[in-house]
Structure formats: structure tokens, C-alpha cells
Amino acid sequence: MIASNSRAELMQSGLNLIGQALSIFDSDLRLAVANRQYQAMFGLPDNLCLPGTYFEDTIRHMVLRGEYGPQDDPDEAVRIRVEQARTFQPHYLERQRPDGSWISVEGAPLSQGGWIAVYTDITETKRQETLLRARSEELSEQVLENAERLAAANRELAATITALQETKRVVTETQARTRQVTEMIPAHIAHMDRDYRYVFSNRQMPQVFPGTRPDIVGLTGDQVLGTTTFAVVRPYMDLALAGRHQVFEMTHEESGRRIRIALTPDRAGNGVYILSTDVTAEVEVREALTHASRRELAAKITSGLAHDFGNLLTVILGLQDRLTHAGLPLEAHADVQATLAAARRGVELLERIGQIAAPQGTALAPIRLQDLLRDVVEMAKATVGGSARLTLNADLPKERLMLDPGHVQDSLLNMILNARDAMGPKGGEITLSARAAAPWLELEIADTGPGFSPEALSRATEPFFSTKQGQGSGLGLAMVFDQAKLAGGTLRLSNREDGPGARARLRLPLRPVRPQMVLLAEDDSELRKMLRQMLIRLGHSVIEAASLAEAQGLADLPGLTVILSDLQLGDGLGSELATPSGPPLILMTALPPGDPLRDSATGPVLNKPFDAATLAAAFTQVTHD
Image (cartoon, rainbow, N blue to C red):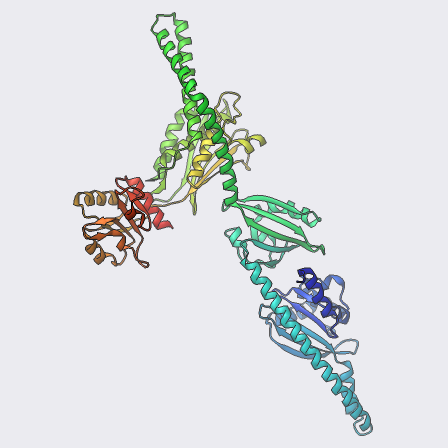
């Protein structure tokens, strides 16, 4: 096997041995390859023979040098030739150059876009034609001689053209294979020149940076990624352009994805090769493992100390309660109450450590988030104090959302109290913002305090880390982080760009509760009635069936979107209602997991009994998948 760089050098050497000048421009009118004769024939400087050179720059150089004769309007002459080139049409022409020599130009389009052009010096052929016309009678013998020479030259030219056609075929196939291979890779591969302009791309940019476009060749980094994102990339790009390999990770703010980017300077010094990979899943697993290890450590600490600590607190609380009723002086009574408060705080701390060590799952329910946020603000206003002002800015859909209301409330209150503590006694502004931007629901707490320190930004979500000098447990943001991960979301901490202060942005999956047309198949009339009422309260329309046969007769009704059926109906199995082209099926059963009949069911199965939140979560799963 020949290495790819050796193969490229071999191909270039072969092209240099061809007598004719040859150039290949791609679909963006940028030079892909040229041989040595191309530079020599037109006397081009080195910078116009490098891959990536614009066709327009080469034509302008030749027009200004007089290659096409005197021009009244050089810019118009350049424009006309560039526009002709953009048609990618096959062509053949002969023209006399300013030095009196003649060349023929033969161009052919390539299947991948662009074209290949072959330039042949036909000065001798033209001289012979002139000689024949001027001295046809006097030089009959010379005519015959030159005709023979011309025939030989033509045969040689035909052989050369055949070789060039084979070269064209090889180049075309190589380009096609290279593009096919790169476009199959689940990463973005590109080449950027020294002007931060893309000269190659495997069209996978949208797979890594959602919202971008696939056809980016010829565009700059600013135009493709946006000013904010490219501002993060550019310092690393400058180091790579200086010859230093770079590998770094960044967060794409618009999508929340974590991207790893490797920059490799090209050997010719003309730019940088770029490999961008979406490593969001890898980072989430890494963070989850890190937090899991910390929770495991907390669990070990808790399991070793919780029993004795709990007994100790019980004794302290009992003794303090006895002292309360012992008729102590008033000042001693205040000390007893303070001791009781400290002991109760110890109990609360022990409970929170237990929550960090073994976080609960999520309990999704259809809620009106606007109402929940107003309740949070009302609860928090009494806590933040008079010096801090709490405001709510919300841009939310009218329909209900599937969320865990307890987790959302706890997380927001934690972040609001952190903002209050950060601002200190002088107070300031706390803003709770909420907006829906698919696929995310964004909840952000911003304050006007001093902002996060560098250490806090890197460690704030670690269990037991606190900047409150012994006044805090260090578990608040760690709990918010864990709850966000459980819900499939993220927690991002940063300092404000528009002034002093901090931001805590909670992103949760946006799952609107959309009304469905439901076929409810249940042979127990009382249970069917209860389920119908539950579905209607969730905002769905319901069609009832009391048997499998009745349900099968209704399963093809127009507009039907979900089937909810008991697994065991009186006349058959509800699983028979599942069809490849029909609406999704949700089954219900009281059979325990492991029962063969239950295990044979495909799709989601609800355990009877269940509540409205569980039912809504199942509907969200099948209608959003």
C-alpha cells in the first residue's frame, strides 16, 4: 500500500512529466492541482499555483499582465471570464498570446464539480499552416515533409490526450472516494486557510454544531459559527497557524453540546486541518462518574456515622427538651433554644447528605410552569429580605409541560438563596428568567453580586464545597446538578458579561403536553370510567372500547394518535392492537415484572395502579420519540 502523502507526491510527479500544462479547479473555482508546465507556460508566481488559489485571482493577474491583450476595462474582462468559468461547460479554443505564440485550451467538467483544463503549445502547428498557405506551390516537398511531421505530432498529441484522460479519471475517482469516506465519518473534517476561510469540508458541520449549514467552503469562521462561538475558537486557531498542534473542548452555547476540536497545522503552512467531534455523551458520562464517586464517598461516610450521629442528636434533643421544662432562668432558656436549633440543623444536614448519597428519581407531571414560577417567587420573596429584589421574566408556551415540580422548585429556591447570599447584606437584583427554546427549557437565575471566583466556577457543583466560611453545607448546587442530570438536563454556571454578577442556567428537556386522540380499551367499566376522566383532565380526547373486537374496529379511525389498552381483555390480548402503521400502543397490567405474558409485550407497559403523572409521562414518551 502507498501512503496517502506518497500517493499524492506520485500523482504530482506524473502530472509534471506531461508535456502539456494542466490545471484542475474545484466547484468553488479554487485551484485543486496543477503541474509544473502550468506555471511555466503562463509565468505565474508561486502563490498563484498553490492549492486553494482563487481562479479570479489568477485571471486578474493574467489580464493585468496583458495575457489577453489590451483591455479598456480590466475588471469587466475578469468578471466575464469568471462568469464563463462558473458555467462549467466543455470547451475548446485556440488563441494567440501577446508574444506571438499560440496555445489551445481544452476544458472538461468533473462529476464532483469544477473542471480540468489542458493547455497545449500549438505555435509550430500554426507556423506550418501559415507556411503551407504562403508557399503551397513552391514548397511542395517541404509541405509533404511538414505534413508528415504534423501527422506524427498529431499522433503524439493523441497519445498524450489519452494519458490525460486516464489521469482525469484517476483524479476524479480519488476525489470521489476521499469525499465519500470523509462524509461517512461522524465528525466534522475541514481545512481553514490563513484568512480563517474554509477551503474544504466534509459537510458534517450541522451534525456537530446544530444550526449551522453544510455548504461552508469559501465562508469564514465568523460566518459559519457566529461571532461568539468563533471568538472561543480563534485563539487556538492562531496558535495552530503558528505551527502548534491544539486539542481543546468547548461548549456550543446555542445547543449545549460539548465539542472537542483538534487543530493540525498543514505542512505547507497554508492553514490548519480541523477535526471537530461531539463529545457531549462522553462528558456527561465522565461527570456522572465523578459525581457518582463523590456520592459513593458521601454514602460511605453517612453509613459509618449516621447511626451514631443520629443517636447523639437524639440524646442532645432529649436533654435540651428536659432543660426547657426545668425552670431555668430566662437567659439560660435562650441558650437551650439555640442549642436545640443547632441540633435540628444537624438533623437536616444528615438528611441532605443522605439525599446526595442516594438521589431519588424524577416524578414527571403535567404542570403549568408559569404558575409554578409565580409560587416560587412568592415563597422566595419572604426569604431574600428587603435589600434584595426578585423579579420574574418568563416567555413560556401556554400548554402544560412534563416536569418534576418538586425538583424544579427545590433547584430554583437553592439558586435564588445562593444568589442572595452572594450579594450579601447590601442586597441587589435577582432575576429569574424562563424561556422555551426547543429542545430545551431554560431557567436562569442572575444576580448583581460579585460573581463566581475561578475556584467556585470549577468546583461549585462538588458535594461539600462552599464559599460561605462554615455557614453553608456545600450541598445546594450539588443537588441541583444531580437533579438536572436525572432529568436529562444540564446546569451551567458563569459570570455575567453585561456587568458584575453571576448566572446559574438550568436546562431541562422541553416536553410539552400535547392533546391526543386516545382509544381506551378496558373491559372493566368502573376502571374505564376512571381512566377516561384522568385522560380528559390531562387534556386528551377519548374514544372507549369495552373489548378487543370493539377496539380493533375503531383502531383505524382518522386522527387517532394513541391507544391505551389493558393487556388482558375479555376476548383477547391488548397487544394485538399494535400494528406497524398504526398509532403507538401503551399497555396496562397488574401482572408483575417477570411474568411471561407481560414480558412478551412490546412497547411501554404501565403497572396498575398508576397515577395521572405516570400516565402523562408514558404519553410524553411515545409521542416525543
